[in-house]
Length: 356
Ligand SMILES: NC(=O)c1ccc[n+]([C@@H]2O[C@H](COP(=O)([O-])OP(=O)(O)OC[C@H]3O[C@@H](n4cnc5c(N)ncnc54)[C@H](O)[C@@H]3O)[C@@H](O)[C@H]2O)c1
Image (cartoon, rainbow, N blue to C red):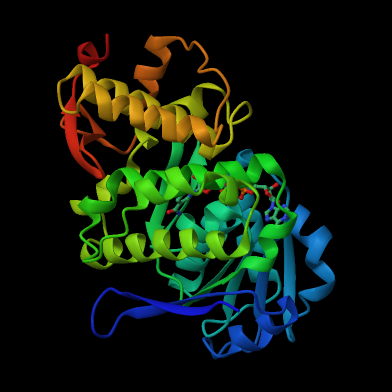
């Protein structure tokens, strides 16, 4: 059975492991204590995960904060509530926070860990596909505000990431597909990640859609490993998103705007990103960056996984305004990641008029 260990190597002194396996969930407690000297652990767990797995997540000397489900929970109020919970329970500097859940739990509790007593140990146990392949690795932590997605946050790396793929068995179809959206993203940027390997991930995802959609364990483990290797290689080269790391935002400039204008209710993050990827592909073709053939091949790949139904009509002005209040705006220009050839993408500047 699969038992992989990858390393995120930020520098010789700063690195951390990602474990990918189908281990017993009860074993996580022991594994976590190998990566922190904490006396006390604050577990931050999503409501649904706690309902399903709470009984198996009994860490010694731990206190538990259960976060309600949903993107809208990744907010300032809950950030403060978790901080107060930690303070009330007298978590000390050498103690640790362990996030058990999807990207929402990972992002908000990572931000608490980054700021509590100026930073305490943080460990990620991702339980959604999206969190396994993306949000648990790379150190981006934060919360949403009324002004947009992830507008307050930090770069704060975990001590270790434990991707126990047994969790994925209870993900509902919608959440599973949401994660696939971030997996498919890597197919469009593989060569730009400069990982030093050739996976031909685009073709792999084209050929194996049936197995992936039926959650074949071997294939699932493979796409998770490839996604993580690509992400780890990008983060190692550009931890703070000064350049290369921006390509991981493929589909996200519009995706974040869609989440914001629909009040984080209508679409999951992955669904919004899938709409964003389709848009970026169209725009790239319109600008002559990619061929009509690659555009159609790309649309086909996204369609195979049925990530979003029909692309809805949005109020264009609202979307552009939302994109303008994003972190990705520099010198008044919107940063857009566009495909430039098969499996490669580039970060380009756009003005509002370019979208009409
Ligand atoms: N930090 C980063 O680098 C990064 C990257 C990508 C996305 N994100 C963020 O991640 C978030 C989206 O994460 P998500 O898609 O994991 O959503 P999520 O965290 O909202 O989880 C989705 C739902 O699935 C439930 N769930 C979790 N694990 C489960 C399991 N094993 N079985 C059954 N149900 C389970 C959760 O309780 C929740 O209701 C967004 O806020 C996005 O901005 C962050």
